[in-house]
Image 1: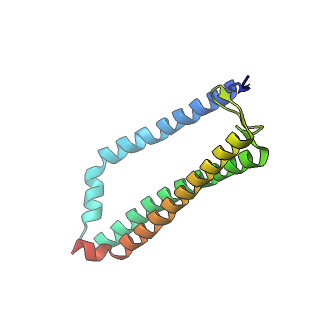
Image 2: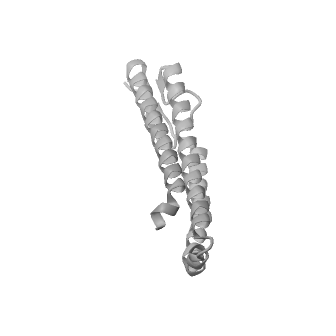
Image 3: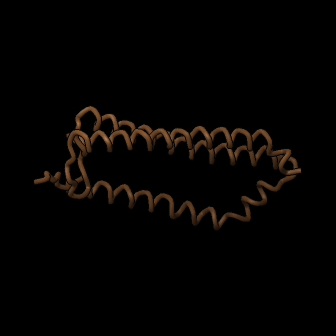
Length: 145
């Protein structure tokens, strides 16, 4: 008979709180951006500073994307290494938000290796976004002409 790791109610509540905080933070930001789009367009379109301002905006967006991918990759690798080290999925001392069947040995290692693969794919995307962004920023003046 398979073992089940029961969901932790506190972990569920914490997850819901994080999601609500993200909604509370990002919904007004999106509204503000839509409301002020005319100002932003005028700010970017000022002829003498257009290239410089577009480079600033692109740099900020690329940095945000790179940071998010880096954090996701680190998290995936940490969980994968915990799975491979313990031979158990989900790893010991990890709280789950829903009832989860515990897998041991070969199945756990397979999941751990799969997670390492996802972590590597995330790192490849990170490098690709940074390289593409760097190239775009370096050539933005040529693209506008």
